[in-house]
Image: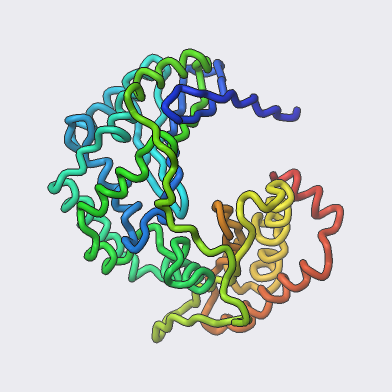
Length: 352
């Protein structure tokens, strides 16, 4: 039986805020997400500010400190998720429909009335810094960051890690994070994404009450526009993070890819499924099943607003590093030269 995705209804609650709702009445649940246009691309020179702001929001809002905010969320059975990436920032939770008003109050307190206090800043920045220091012992994240840096360059917002570097966190100041909140938490940057047991007009009215008096303004050029292309003429490059006596090599292979608006998403998903997005992909059948170099290999595409990133990730025994790299490049070149067979396409469609 084929699945038909329910239609999304547009919301216009006012003040420049936009919204989309997928109405589903089969379960008494509502998923809510406030998506803001701007993430690392709005930081300017303050690397890590968007991630730091996301962490600081959970330290309190609407007159509640971190403990009171956590208690309020627990009372309605909701878990708050706050994050940022290269060009967006988001706050999301899911609740039973009978708690929708309380959930909206909490979300808009976080958006419009965040505490952003000094005590919360010291705590959240310290936790981020500890995690960033711990990352140094994990070869996988280090290799992934290396691929980002190689593809985008050091001064590109997309080249920055989602978990900021310790030195960037040390350089950040609370006033800088507060200033970023003032730039990002604006109605013209805000889109409400909702799905669940509520109608469009009812949700629109609930949103309108909570944003009343939140004045819109003309969008300002306060975001850093990422470069769309990598430096030219560099060719194939090798970046090496050496660890003596390591038993295995963590490999990342990739290059810049298309932006979100420049690609046929279903076709790209099928292509990636065939190459390295499934257990029966060409890469996995080659490196794992045929040669026994790895327990698994995957490929993926990121699709941000500007140029994205294609990457292949795997880990192999140190002695197999060069032959594994050779097979990865062989599969990439073969895919360009030999289009997928009909049976591969059909299998990829079934995998989804």
